[in-house]
Length: 202
Image 1 (tube, one colour):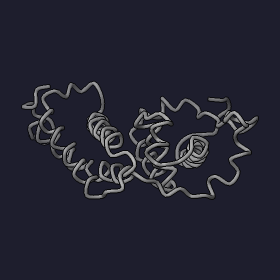
Image 2 (cartoon, helix red, strand yellow):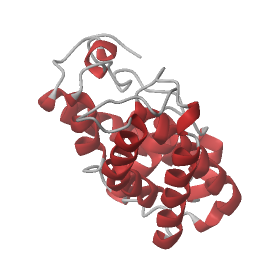
Image 3 (cartoon, one colour):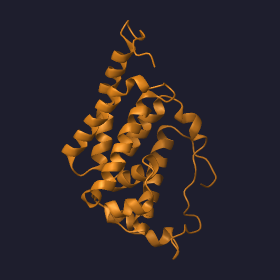
Image 4 (tube, one colour):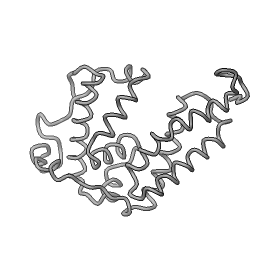
């Protein structure tokens, strides 16, 4: 990408991207703090992410949204941190989220009849609209901490349940219950703020 191109108000494109980095820093920091118990380490990791992004601006091709590209850098750093620090990352599990676990899963840890979560109606199309991620952020960060932690580790960072359970010191069954609760609450929040209710299974 030619970072000398004039983009907004006569400013060089590189300077515009630097301003956008500063603007998304609070979101990056909120996400890092959600995953790491060490708040200072979370801030350091975000700073490393911003530095890496600045150093790599010439390699940003514009094939993804700029914010998504920067989040990808943080995502990789967080995954490395979680795998490296392991048990230092802890979750405050709300036992109320686990009370009816037996109603959700059978003895083989499979969904019981009627417990499987439903899918949204054409979320891909809605994700392309600018306001979607504002609603998404609002909903995720209003989840209970353990639910937000497990959901983001699984769905946004791509960690498998074994890694999540080891990092947070929870059982696989509890992990799936928390994840299910998070999806239900996130679904309700998104439906009230964005989607309309659909039918079908995922």
